[in-house]
Length: 99
Picture (cartoon, rainbow, N blue to C red):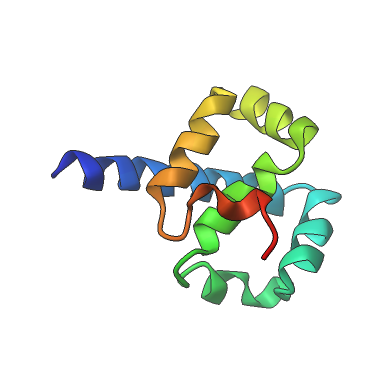
């Protein structure tokens, strides 16, 4: 496996963990659904779409208390979330900038 493929696989694994973190939180899940416009029953289908996993990490990164809680609960360094985001499709750093 190439280094880029390995990095992407690790990033996908982290994003899936982040999705589980969001889905398991009764406050975060409704906010995530509202922001993304996805219905709860459609998450599994949406997760297969390009950019969805990057969107999950962008959601985590957009709110520092959420990022820090995710990092603490999963043993993930906060900087690893941003690094994982950049390794995913559509995971560029433009998520902070509106068009």
